[in-house]
Length: 433
Image (tube, rainbow, N blue to C red; front, side):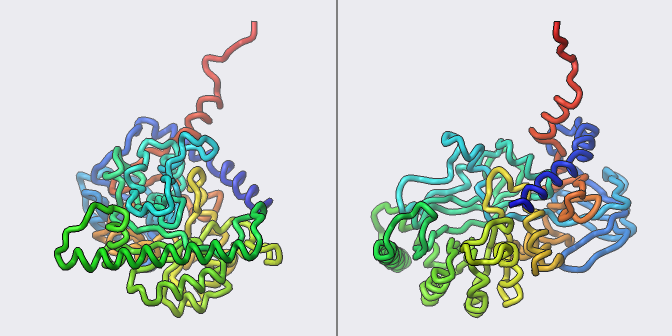
């Protein structure tokens, strides 16, 4: 835990120069579109190497040109000499926008009543005005997956870009039905069920999952033949997974449960993504053989078992990647999604390597979500989700100087920075009589 605290306080120290920058750019109180020329930077494309002394032209929300001698007389020129450009980072699993303060129940909106609610859309519940959104953006995270929580099928997750006045404006083009795979593990230290009760509960949940899947199959077969059925939105949504219209994102963590999930989906003919996968390192070869991509994290976490090494969570992503699993990273957070760069840094240091860690927060999730032609790298024609930093953002001392999302220049300010500025110099000072 000490390492996590050290990372957090190092982040606060590194943020101080950025706060000054935010004050300089204070007139940009809103994201603004336009034509921008980022000049003379080192561009880390992720997919096509590193380009030195290179410029990037942003126009109409897209990356229009990349080169060393771009002519764009009417563009706003931003000198990026000595800086680095990366694609905006993607967090593959959060509750950002669905939670404001975890400890205040009235601000938590990620769960519906019931065990089977796949038709509930996370996108409709996203709060574009959440204070956590600008807090997240200034760390270089431009896109996140907002995921509902709860029962067996709690809802449909949505990928969002962190700019926009409405959820629809934020939508980044990917949704997936979420399933919490029946677990054979204990729910925590306070789980006092006997082993026999755990086994019975698991078998009951497995039976329910199978019955619901069969209903969805029947629903799809009947509707594809033109049958008119009664209104059943829950089954209609799950039927979209059966039909291949939507992927199934399965939250599964214990090694035995991962093995069971692999067997369960083997004959389903569905697009499947595993999320969580805390003990993926134990069965990495089996996941790779099944060809199932993984959204794993948080990386900065405790081991799942007391007998595990201290770095089990840190090394999990690297071990799976080495086995051949396509890995993307997530924070599984709402208030501290901003720490994604440091989760990636830990994964890089504990076996994943820096290059693969960058892929795990950029192009890998873009490929897993079927959006590799739009997101995840610095390439002409892609959406202009870009960050400009003084150095590699995985370093706590790095300062994010510019952020672009959907081609909008994002103001580098948020509630934390405004409060810092307010109380740094208290004016007018209050004097005690």
